Image (cartoon, rainbow, N blue to C red; front, side):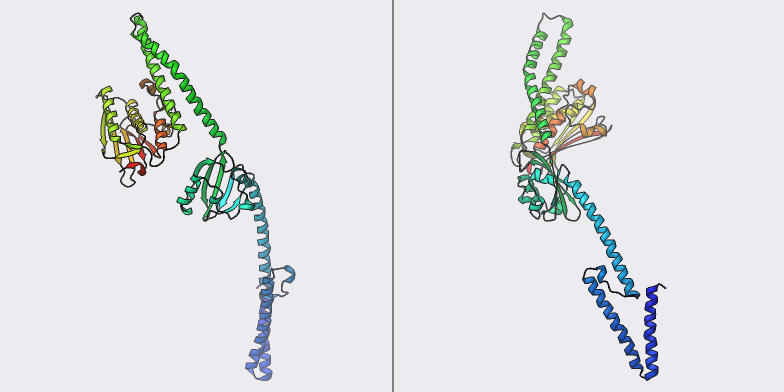
Length: 437
């Protein structure tokens, strides 16, 4: 038995001994029982009072009750836990100070929001990019400080517990700097808002788009002249027979280059125009567009090469830009015809998804398929799965990139899936608010 418990046992033994002595001397056993117990309990109550006063005063070592036994042991444990807690607090304070120093030096703006979207903490970069200063703006609602319509809409239409890693690109409230805002949920009801300066990337993108547009415009005129002279040479009877085939080949390449230039100009236009508003555009009869495209392809492609199956809902219409929808349909169907071997069956569907209300164009072929590693890159400019075959059939490598940009402009999306030697499926879906009723 430890020493404190031994001391406490001696105390209890002394109470019992006093009880026997007083009872034996007086013969009054009630008095003999009550007197030692009352004295012991009074002393114990005093010690508990001293302990409570010490706890209330802040556990100062100089004010600790001077006692032994079990109460002394309890006081030792309390003081030890206090010292241990003080040590851990000092350690955590040091870690928090280091963390704050690291995050404050972070080049990206970082702001911690509570469940009410109020600022709890921010670093120095937040003041530079967003004009948010921690000491001044703590407790402020983030919507009062960042008033960009896109951000306000995100805060209003998304409940805090439904926000799931929202990313927005907009102008800084302090300058024309382009920034990317990202709202990330963490912990219990807290959110991390980060902002990154992407002005350099935006400027480089604009320079690239301007260069492509200008180069395409400058190439169009000389290419038209070259194509015109080739056409004259091809029809001239004075040209030797052995030069006829090279001239025809040059004409084909000039035509292909002209198509590349037209596609580049189309891409440039799509990249520099803003997204359509939800209800803008004219009512487009997609089923009619598809029927015309299939009819034109069947006139130019031998029926024994590809079989086209058209399945559309004639009453299903969307509100969009008709020329751009025509481009989406034409590119997806021609892509299936050009890049699949003879005998391939192509199924074209225009239908409504009942559970979501989205209108979708689906082009499915049973060709050789596309390797899984190539699918994520299909919408990149000039990317080809089979370079030799693409050049042989005259593809520009820009068709799917154009489709992707048009779908994004109409708030839609393009899905691509493929099973080698089974089927390849392209699905372009438009949001429910574009369906014309």
